[in-house]
Image 1 (tube, protein in one colour):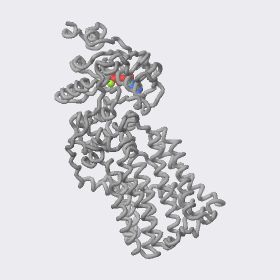
Image 2 (cartoon, rainbow, N blue to C red):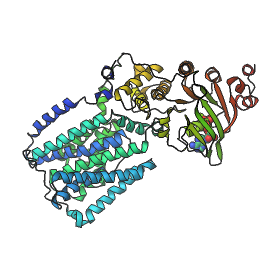
Image 3 (cartoon, rainbow, N blue to C red):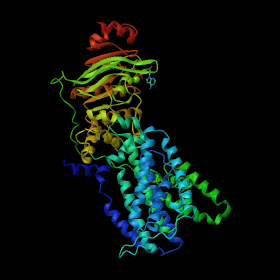
Image 4 (cartoon, protein in one colour):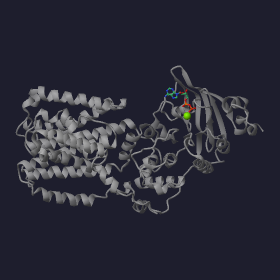
Length: 594
Ligand code: ADP
Ligand code: MG
């Protein structure tokens, strides 16, 4: 099956890249026709102008908060930068409207990227704190640097663009410009969600650690999401300035940032359509409630709080309850290309660890561990609880920096590199405590795995879908491809994790206690799956407690105790080693010794 028919048959998000374009064109024509019904000036026009320009800024919040999970409290500041760009550019510097708009958007972008670079490396709520400060500083500057900004009086007589033939100076035509821009942006953001970048953002939102071990550069992804939100804030603000011809600093204060955030959350921050809905409502709601006079604010506040409490996904989230996942097409997929080099090159070392140490304060979780994992073998790492097995995997995958020692994958030293860089060498892992991307479907989770940098098909969307389906086929979850991963049982999520790792066609697969939390029959299934993987000759490092399983699948065993390697070799020798029996098994094992 060719890749395009494959994508069409499965109806997968990626394949929809250009879907919706005809609908977009039709919608633009329709909206332009409708906008001619809006009066050329006055109250109704202003309501529409406000809703359209605010919606563009709110769409930015969908990207940074909805997709990427980062709280930004300065969207009104970026809106203000765009607005002042247009205002000062056209009024004081005599620039053409679109040049001034570009200047406004660029300044919003520059500040946005700079703030992102400065704060996003730190994680946690630094972005929220930094954006609050930036918001306050900008308000002070706009108010007090009167020489540049006209101070608290604001800027008057802002011109609209003049394009021959388009009559954009007239209110209803300018509204048309704003609406077309808004629709293009809504379409772009709706589409973004189903691209590799959009999936990376959502993966970062749902689980940073898992995202980094899937090869996603967390920092770059967050800065990009925040940068896009600043661009859209600036663009919305620039168009706003042209719409109202007058702006002043109080329109871009911290309170306005909260209003924009409320719009996004109310409508549904996961979707650009939610942003439209929320913005429309919050622009119109105060007008509807005007008859309430004094109690207006209380009613307005209560309405917003009620909707947010009872509809955590916003109003647009309601549509998800109506939507039913599309059935998964039954068409054949090319089988998962797993390494099959068993017996040919088993002498080659896939992963070499030398003198690896990791100290937490005084605790030596790892204390000079050596290990060589041969290509095409299953290597088991065992040891009592707390002996350093998970720490070992965390250091090898780059989540922890080693205190000493070296790690080489396929002959390449990767000791100092970040987790996402190591995945390039073909490292993939699962976690003792499951780390899936809960806000995404099963298929999307596995697609993130297939998009591992360095994977042969990572840049080809249709093949990514196919590879992900093949991985789901392999673990028996193809029928659940379109389900949200958070609705699955613990045991099934474990398989999603394994499929996510397999979809990246790893050179070395690290499994940290894959049987943890599984019931007996699930454990049995897992044993079968491991044997199938072993049959394909995949190189696996497995940590497990189940001695029967380890004995059945392992070609080689390394034993840790208190962070030190106490035995290393073939299963029979290792499991009958007196130190191992003493440290790990507690008492001699008759069957192993026999
Ligand atoms: P295992 O996976 O073999 O059960 P771990 O590698 O999880 O063991 O833990 C080894 C030791 O390191 C334990 O004593 C644990 O408490 C300690 N440890 C693990 N991670 C950390 C951490 N992030 N900070 C401090 N101590 C840690
Ligand atoms: Mg562990």
